[in-house]
Length: 229
Image (tube, rainbow, N blue to C red; front, side, top):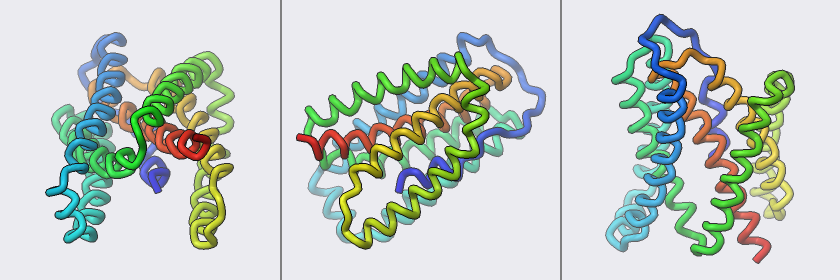
């Protein structure tokens, strides 16, 4: 269900005048926040795997799910609002809320896999991100043209996944299709990040979009690698 989070995140937002930063600082903020997101996920695995936390989740599973989704959506909305107002404090607060709730929720998924599987999926994700990020910068018009197709394909895959889940059908091919779609989103969002004004709120917003793209590839690759072992 992680794809839903990417779909609610707006692609672009109207920008007000804001204090610009250097392109280098802009890119470092994006990269640093994405790296920080994976660090939170790693820390989250250690937290959610403790017996005390697992017992709490077992007793309060509904509260945990509602709180995680609510915190994730609230963080995204804060960052979106921060882009329109160009508010640095609001954008950072939104990202912190988003990454803590969403990262902790993803940790529950990651902890189900062994370390070799996680390492293989992470290395593959890093390679995919580098390749499609570079393609997004080299061929921006291609990714602009397929943006609509990617969004429709993602919605269709979510519906198909739900139906196949109810039917108990193997979803390996669906995982591969989702990876392909999010590869396209990585290229598109990389190009979008390069065309936005270099401000802190814009950097935070694009870091969130790219993190969602990358982490969806990572989660699907975990399933693919695990099935092939």
